[in-house]
Image (cartoon, rainbow, N blue to C red):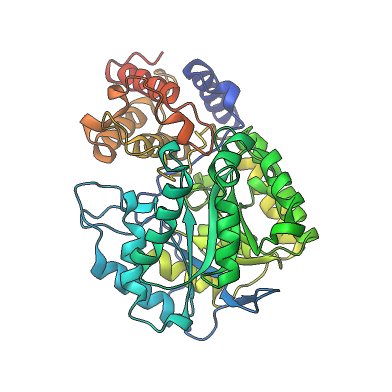
Length: 472
């Protein structure tokens, strides 16, 4: 048995080397979180009534806001096609969104995070409709100045975007306003053009002074020089909060996941020094930590059989006292219910649990997935590709062992069939990697710095090899 296992591991390594990802074995990404069952990953926590009065809250040190530790990320609202808001031909499913919001609020969730960029520009309106049914002082709305395109970098265009958020959300003040995605693209140069040279940051500070913004912060991606610079001007700006990517893989291994990233241990530590509350995005690493490889899932279930795989990642993020809220993009009711159980109330990690999750993180790093977090900033593709769905399927198959290794392997035909059939089911053929022409329009939008055309070409070549049974 030991020889067989060793042979399979050698075959897998050789396959990955030949596929072109052997050198990237330390990268990590996202397993198909477009599947409604992946958050609980087939490992549901104990069923039963979810308490409505046990939500864990954190208090903002400056404003005194009592914020639910589970925050609702509104990036992936359900649409009428059964998807997560990225189908341009399907409306957002407002009735279902209302039900999700009702369930969340009934169980103590009071923080809702949206953006002009989410759900192809439709998230703010849907979020506003759902929340308008409740008294304004019973929830907190976070939205962003998502002026990513150079055409929106002028003072006039940026302020117009900001004012439109009030209209879409149907509010006269915003509780938490973020400069969206600082550190992306050209780092400091892009930050200055988006927020400083045009006077937009000064305008937002004036808006905070006038009370139309209650808390001002930023979400950080990429260039650490921008993060450090923004904290260096804290005495002048007085950031009320900062949104960072934090999970048990990125805590110490962010650069192994993606060389552009910085360990969350450093980011959180720097915020703690200044007593700036942290808001957490990507606690599941874009879904990756909810659908882990089978043997990793088994170790998590063995340690806490009644809990879902995803709950470990949420407990990790929520166990840090400087965290104000942990965001989760909950498309389906079962996602929401599983997370409500985790945070009602939170069972903080022990020191032994943290050691265990560090060991788990090291296991996860052995899987050479593409570091896509399904943010959809690369969309829409001008040539119709569903870029996130292509990457999601590839990563999902890596995690499940359905990327065929050697054609001589006894599982080759089963894995080949699973990959190809799953690909056609997950991504319509006209939106698959084969239609990428390498225009590069998506590249500068990706906060993870993925060379998307290169990955599309590599996956397309691999698919063609599978179709022709040319893999070894």
